[in-house]
Amino acid sequence: MIEKVTDGKNLLALIIRKKNYPKKIGTNFISGHKDSLQLGFINYPTEHIIKPHFHLKRKKIIDTCPEVLIVQKGILNVFFYKKNKQKINITKKLKSGDVIVLLQGGHGFKVSEKISLIEIKQGPYLINKDKKIF
Image (cartoon, rainbow, N blue to C red; front, side, top):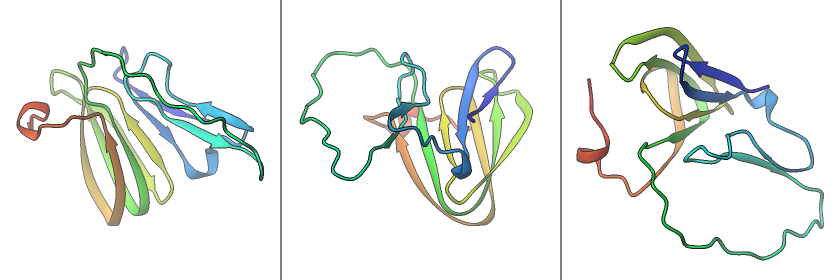
């Protein structure tokens, strides 16, 4: 089960709780095939071979800076905002093992219990050109 956060019109985030990680054999993408950042869960048995491959170089137009946060430990509250900076009345509490894909809109955080996170975002990333604090 994937939790979807919207502003009523736009998909802002996807949340995958640790207990809901996809377990189906194979590669299980939870993001849409057109999303600018893809997130999949991969499950194969021992001795399975994934064929050698490389990814082709091609130009892509990416006009967003999506990011993924993986909570290693602790508790993180996430707040969501529309593109016009209006706060949405939705708060999500993330715990150890939870994953969130932030696709668009704004977001803010409050640490409820000392956290350790892994962050993955679309690059290249230039803080003075890719982030606006409000």
